[in-house]
View (cartoon, rainbow, N blue to C red):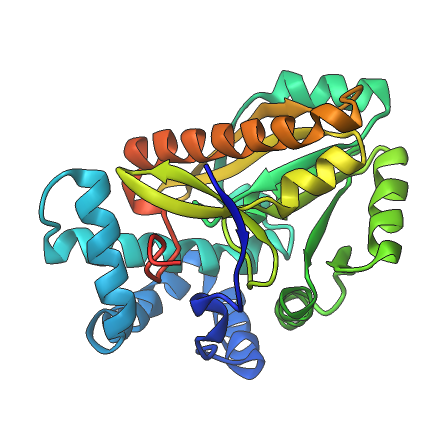
Length: 302
């Protein structure tokens, strides 16, 4: 394992496809026609990206080759893109509180209930594996838990714009990372019993990363999320919303590391161990649900 700081990541230099205007139009159409009607448009969108996004196509092939252990077919690649499009489309309904449209099962619910009963928050580490919105939606459909999100400043602005386009009445609780003020804000949220989430499989660059073997080859994972949890003495919990097809999701919560009581001299080794465990669990879920991986760039080249 090695740690190093790298310049702006390749995925962060890629231009964004789509727009807030397009998201608003898709939201109106989907809410008007219903989930089944809205999904008909997804096939057209997915077909476009399947044919005219060569970089994403190469990345999809490379990933599927690793996780399936064979040369992926066109059907495999289309299925991965369709899973991705489905989770994006379902945000429209989740952010508008249409939870009745979905069949959601939860693994690790007792863990979250214990944290709630204790009145303590926890640091939730997600990934571009499945839907990040489904676990957050659970916090809105049930009284009690609050879920805020920590993101790098550029991503935080995009998240707020996306959420406002889908539901202007929804107040986004997103903390832009990168300052002492942000750390104090996160500390305050945890003290209030809020579950604070952050995606832990990408970095826009400029921060320390750790090399971990992932799906048969070395890949770099950011140390930042575990460092935040360690500095705040918080429990780091893996949070995934795995898409199972149609309207079904499986939400997973499981402990990655508990940094409470970890001394300063032990902090670095504890963070390294947490990153390794995070990568290992992602690998296991990728193998179990191979079409839920939504990093459409060369993950291993970073």
